[in-house]
Amino acid sequence: MTNTEEEAYEFPHRHLLGLRDYSADDILHVLDQAENFLEILNRPIPKIPTLRDKTIVNLFYENSTRTRLSFEMAQKRMGADVVNFSSSASSVSKGESLKDTIRNIESMKIDMVVVRHPSPGAAHFISRCVDAAILNAGDGAHEHPTQALLDLFSIRQKTGRLKGLKIVIIGDITHSRVVRSNIIGMTRLGVEVTLCGPRTMMPLFVEELGVTISYDLEACLEWCDVAMALRIQLERQEGGLFPSQREYHERFGIKKRHLKEFPDFTIMHPGPINRGVELESEVADHPRSIILNQVTNGLAVRMAALYLLSGGMRS
Ligand code: NCD
Image (tube, rainbow, N blue to C red; front, side):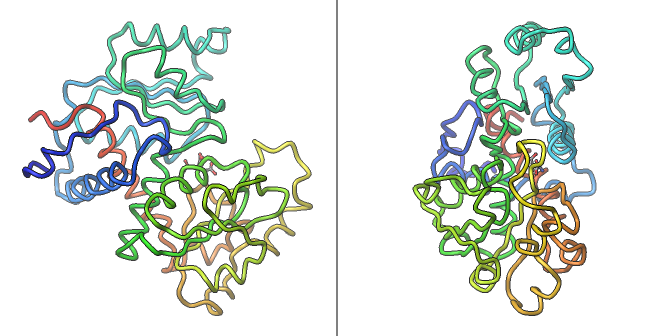
C-alpha cells in the first residue's frame, strides 16, 4: 500500500456518488486497494487505525441489512468514530428537510457521510450542501457504486479477469440501481454484458449503454461466464409488471437443472434473495454461488473506498 507506484497515483475523487464519475483506472485502483484490505481482514486482529481521526455518519433513509452493516463494520475496523442515523427514528418524521438534517449533522464536525435514500440524486444533492466526503450507499433506482465495486471485485477474484468476460444480469433491470452501476463499471472494464428479464422491466434504449438484450434465459446461461440475478424490486414498482412471482420464476428464475445443463457459469446475487423467485434455493447455496463471498468482499471494498476518500494513509 505504501510502495512508490501507489504513492504516485493521486486518487482524483472527493466523493463516491456513482461509478459514472470513475474511469476504468479509478475503478481498478479501488479494487487493487481492496485486495490489501481483504488481507488485513484475514489477520488475527483485523483492525487498523487509518480512520482514527475521522467521524463518519451513516445516514439511512431506506432499509438496509448488508450495506449498512458492511459500512459500519468497515469504519470500525479502521478506527473511525461512527454515528448511525435512521430516518424513522429522527426528526425527519417531524418534517425536517434533507438539507436541514444534513446541515445540522455537519455542524457536529463530521468528515464523511454514507447515505442511502429513496430519491435518485440524493447523494449528489448532499455533496452540494456540505463539505464532508459523501459515499452513495444507494439512491433510489439510480446508482449503488459500492455494490458494483464489490461485484467487480468478486468476479475478478473468482475468474482472475474482467476484460472479455461474459456476464448476464437477470431480472428487474428498470428498477435496479445495482444494474445501473454495474453496467457502467463492467462496460468500462471491457466486460461483455447481456441483460435478460421481462420486457416490462427492460428500460427503453438501454442498448445505448453498450449492452445486449435477451429475453431467453437459457441461451444466456449457455453463453455466460457469470450470471447475476437481481431482486424483483416490488417496492419500486407500481404493480402489474409480471403476472406472478411463480410465473417470473418459471421464465427467469435460475433453477437446479440449469446447473447441470450449463456446467460453467458462476452465480451471483446482491441480496436480499427472494428464494424460489430469482433463484431456486439450492442454486443460492450451491458451491458455484459466490453470494456470501460478495458480502465478505463488500467489507474490503468499502474499507478501500473510505480509505481513498479520507485522503489516504496517515499512519
Ligand atoms: C441492493 C440494494 O439495496 O439496492 N441490495 C444491497 O445493497 N445489497 C439490491 C436490492 O435491494 O435488491
